[in-house]
Image 1 (tube, one colour):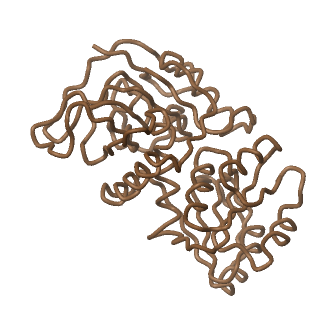
Image 2 (tube, one colour):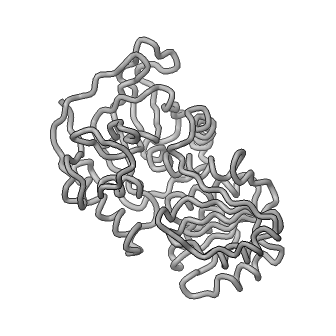
Length: 332
């Protein structure tokens, strides 16, 4: 048996239970990972609230990100050995069990080795958000180039902090939006060249001032995108990345968009193929090992306080409480 955080029926954070469940048995293509760190993502709270994306096992172990140590490998696995430190995301989807447990059985195609010197809690904190940022920024989506200007909404958040760092490492000029001076300082520490305080400044005017030739890549993280603002800020052939706003139905300035020859990309990382995700996962491992990618951890809890962690995440994602900057990490 193992300890796990799970629920049997969807609902508020209080439905999460912490107790004993059977330790999973691995198949021939899987590895058994002993968890050392997991992290919370907004999608975890949507699933717990009853979002009907796919059928869930009963009971359902929450969570999609993990870092830990391989304890057992399946007969057909030749890429991993017992004792390897690994990390991954993309668990808990499409009918699979999640990661908030002492052990997790994971298909080896989703696991990435963690280099010496990189911490497991940093890997867990960078997992879904890091893969999301890498997939969106580079080949196949925005195709960010050195010397271009990128604007990121919420530069101190989970995905935002990864976008800021990866864009800067790629040679881009980065403008980040922040809701407070404290979060602006985080953005600058992560590498942002300029910060717009969206609560107190005129965002459109500040963008025009900071990027008179327009934004090449505009990464939108808000649940209600303002396309008049976004398209108005774009440079010729600019690219817009959307990763939120499932229920949004905003007005869209068609004319300015196509006259500027812009493109728009909408994507969710968990629909990427194993080979696409491996490119991002292995690139992130290299950056973590070299100390070039900084996790932005806003809170840490023991696994037994998973309900409290979900409450904090939900309060910031849905209710804009502004009490969290970065990721929530839990330790089994």
